Length: 362
Ligand code: FAD
Image (cartoon, rainbow, N blue to C red; front, side, top):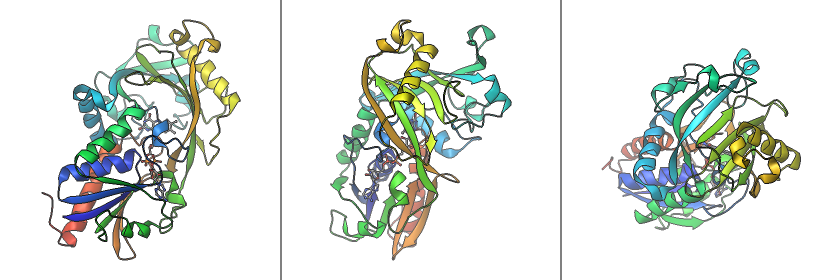
């Protein structure tokens, strides 16, 4: 058996822990400052919508390998809190002319995207279904994850396979060397600390910064569709309009913002008003044609996405004599890339194990 400590209990750490536990041959401890059930803007995972709107400009294995896993869970595992929902993307003419330079636009809004062959029934909508002010629209079947159910479900799946969970705040990634529940020094540490990897000793990744996401969670139900527009007319360039209804009574998320470098964890009332106004305009069914006063707000919230200049970091590094596998910096796609990233982490763990002659995959 190899001894592994996973640092971080967001979607990245939990998915890695589950994948490594399923593989067998690993004794796993997950240590984290925050656990499912906690709400803190620096613990990003609970705040995500979360849906699958592929963002990579071309095929990437993170999103490509995650979709089949989430689809399978939506089809076969109601207790995971994931359901299918149609996603409708609306493109504004000026965003299309500018080559979709907005925060979510890397690959999501381009015409004829790579992911049209990944998700079911991707179609361009006829002009009659394109609202005024938009130049075109597309739709496809996606999923929406109720994060308040999915994160505890991941944790439960880990516990069922013998993974042990502990609270700890690490000052240095090498502090994990003392934290396996076995009392042994771990052979491998997985660093899934998200945004806080920019402050963790031994990592201190200065390419990591927050991309502030403000949302409003409401009891109102949207149409059967999730909606996302390529830009907004009434706010700053880092403001977005998206709507998604979480599975199993999880409420409807109205978003949002993508404010790079902004650490403010307190919801801004002016932004909140614009988010709600856009949402009822884009989806009048939310309030039966009434204004924002007919929205039944559960809470206003802010989560800080772990944005990383240059993209996610998934690689191994020897720190103070112990192998560390990094898996952080997922920005706005941590759920929709979670399984693909966990599969890569497992490959790196296998490489280290065979180097250390710990026995390969079972
Ligand atoms: P986190 O969830 O932040 O977890 C980090 C873990 O590391 C925590 O347990 C923390 O306590 C622990 N940790 C950190 N430092 C230390 C330390 N020093 N010692 C001990 N423990 C430590 N993604 C999608 O795929 N689809 C979406 O629709 C989507 N929508 C989003 C909407 C909003 C408003 C936001 C904010 C994000 C959204 N995201 C979405 C992005 C997604 O939420 C993130 O990419 C993902 O949650 C990152 O997960 P993580 O596990 O890497 O980090």
